[in-house]
Each structure stands twice: as structure tokens, then as C-alpha cells.
Amino acid sequence: MNSLVLVPGGAGFLGSHLCERLLARGHTVLALDDLSTGHRRHVGHLSAHPRFRLLVHDLTRPLPRAARSAGRVYNLACPASPAYYQQDPVQTTLTSVIGIWHLLELCQSSGARLLQASTSEVYGDPQVHPQTENYVGHVNPIGPRACYDEGKRCAETLAFAYRWQRNVEIRVARLFNSYGPRLRPGDGRVVSNFIVQALRGEPLTVYGDGQQTRSFCYVDDTVEGLLKLMDGPIEGPVNLGNPVEHTILELAEAVLRLTGSRSELHRHPLPPDDPRKRRPDISLAQRQLGWMPRVSLEDGLVATIEWFRRELELPATGGLARKAA
Ligand code: UDP
Image (cartoon, rainbow, N blue to C red; front, top):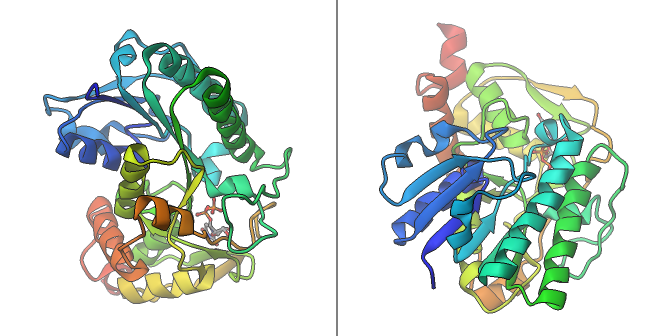
């Protein structure tokens, strides 16, 4: 196998962790990123690495020449936070659809294998719980989340069309709410929002009644799942997520406890089309890839909080100390 690995979205939250792991495994890594939500800083510690390169590239444009020699491609390119992906819904949709089209064309001519990072959002506001891979989903095609959900659904469609019609080797992972260090403080996702708010001693913004659920997967577990899927025997789609489900209020309480913050909870309206429940059935990944998450929510939050503390340059006692100071 050619050891050059292409990582579109490589300067993003998930992408930067994946690049680290690929380098540690001895691969040469070419990261592509338009830096819309990714950041050079996420891969700053890799910039001097002899086997790492970052090219600023918008995936809706034709791929750079250097990408042609990749043997494997992990496509993580797309803003993933609702706040970010709704800022430019046209670009969000095209990044998924035109982006994967460019990558599939590349893989067809080079024989490279493509792993597509799809999402639990393909299930929309699910009517089946927990979600198995054969559930076809419940997505509003014209709602505010559609640019992400339908873009990712169409990307899956194209991946399987190229697989069946043109024999391209594919892998499709459906990721459920990954979190960890390098989520951006202003990213708008619930884990980063709550941690930043708690550390700053600001109110935690709970949308709706806080009884909606998510299943949060620590980034190291997600990356391990992606590597296993790429190397493993099945194409997917495969759910990769933590099957332990929490309400948003439970998450808020855990963040307050682990930061030692006395922030209050403030209620805000629930955004339109916000899924009420989400939990992956991961039996397929367990059976076929021998994968399951190892990091508990508590341990993952502690590591993430530590990272945010340093990022925000706050003292170890967090929001409480700042308020008292
Ligand atoms: N959420 C919240 N407060 C926030 C941000 C998000 O209560 O400050 C809720 C949001 O309404 C959703 C859940 O947390 O029900 C997860 O939101 P996120 O944006 O992290 O991810 P997604 O909705 O894509 O799963």
C-alpha cells in the first residue's frame, strides 16, 4: 500500500487528531483544509514533522496534484457544528457533495481507498431508538440543518454509487457527537459551549427543556474507530459512537461538577429540527471491527476541560475562582 494518506479536513478538530495518529503509524500525511472551521494552530505541532504537510484547499475546487499519489483518503472536510455549518449552507452542501465527488474521481483513477466521515445526522430526528445502520432516517430536506444532513446523505449516496458502478473501494462511518481537545471555544457545540461557559463563570445555555439526549464519544475513541474501519473488512455504513446516552441537563451537571463552577443554567429556545434523541447501536462495529469506546464521559470531559483551561488561560479552579477574584 502507498503510505501517503490524504486527509481533507486535516486541520479540523477530528482531522488534527487523526493526522497525529497516522504519523505515529509511520504514514506520510497530506492534510487539505480550507481553514473555514479548521485552524493552522491545530496542526502547528506537526508542521515541522518531515512526513506532514498542510495545503490550504477548498474541496469544491479541483484537487491539487500532490493528492494524486495518496493510497488512502479520510474525508473529514465539512463544518460539523450547527452554528458553523448554517452560516454558509450553500458551501456546506457543496463541500460534502462536490468534495466527495472530486475524491471519488481521484480514487477511481488511482485505486485509492476512501473513508467518508458521515454522521448520525443522516438519521435526522430519529423515529427509531437506538439507531441501527439500516434505519433510513427522518430528515427535513429543507430545514436549517439540511445543508449538513442532506449533504452528508448525498455524499453516502455518491460513495456507494462509485462503489457499485465503478468499483471504488469505500468505507463509510457514521459519527455520533465527538468531543475532546481542539473543539473551538466559539464552535457552538454543546460540549464546548458548556465547558467555556462554566470556566468563565457564565450561565450555561440549555436549549429547550434539556431533556433531549446525545451520546458523546471522546475523540481518541472516534479516531481509533476510523482507523479500524479503514483497515477492516466492511464498507459500512458503520455507526461509530458511544452508546451511553445522556440528557443535555445531565451533561450540564457533569460539566459544572468537573469544573467546580457555580454557573447557573439559563434556558433558551430549542433550535428548529433539533433531534430529541440520539444513541448509536454499535453492534456492527463491535462484531466486525472489534471496536467500542473506551473513554468514559467523565474521563473525556476531564481531559477536555483541562485543554480548554489552558486554551482560555484560566486558573485550575475555573469559573468559581475568577468570580471570587
Ligand atoms: N445545546 C444546548 N446548549 C448549547 C448548545 C447546544 O442545549 O449551548 C443542545 C442542542 O440543542 C442539542 C444538543 O445540545 O440538543 C447537541 O447540540 P450540538 O450543537 O452539540 O450537536 P448536534 O445537535 O449536532 O448533535
